Image (cartoon, rainbow, N blue to C red; front, side):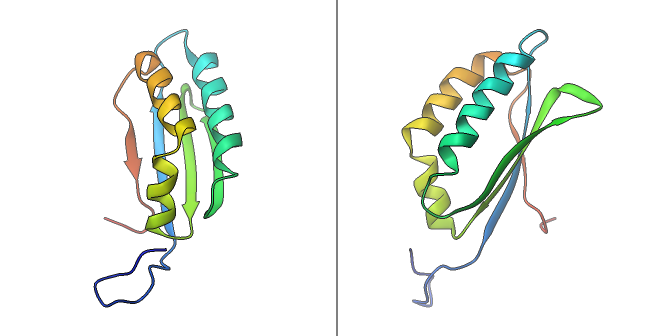
Length: 106
């Protein structure tokens, strides 16, 4: 766990909603990659929730919901081999750059 500037532990829950869009015909491949990522990421320290969904109106679009105990836990997750391997495999099959939303932020 990290400390904030005040010296207090970083205990703020961090939530993200990444949105992925597969290239035409690559939807099943991206879904498989996200499923594997979900399974591995749920075992990462500090993971409170990690789930992906298909957009019912756009079957090429996948929404991931992540919740972490702290920004330090998220940072450690992002350095894991399974995360890096996912992005290396997913980048060539994505139709557009990853979009990330933060619930509660504007």
